[in-house]
Image (tube, rainbow, N blue to C red; front, side):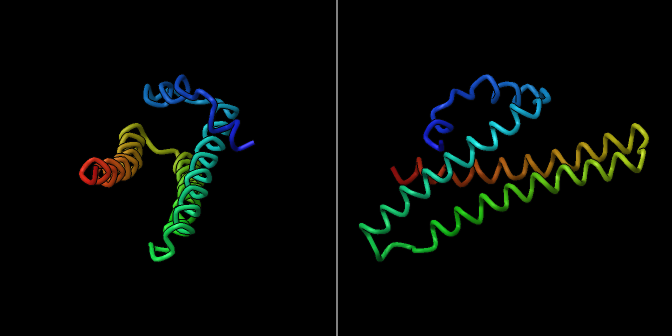
Length: 124
């Protein structure tokens, strides 16, 4: 099942997200499952590398697992925060402030990803 999820062409869905389009539940669930499948595949590769090189950092797979759990938790917190903010019946200006605050958190995480991935290019 994970192999099938990893091989799906999610480019149209990813492009929809990048255009700020709202995904339906099926698209959202598929994107989440595919992301998990890709991370589990990476964790398997890491486990294999660690078996070949036992002196390497044994916490890598654990860190990846914790990252996956944190992403799931962050998604849940974003959803519950938006629901709570909606219940407050914010005015337009307050809604804009809420949107900017939440999107800033995601932008910060994306910047962290880009900075961290740059180390791949530097090590090659």
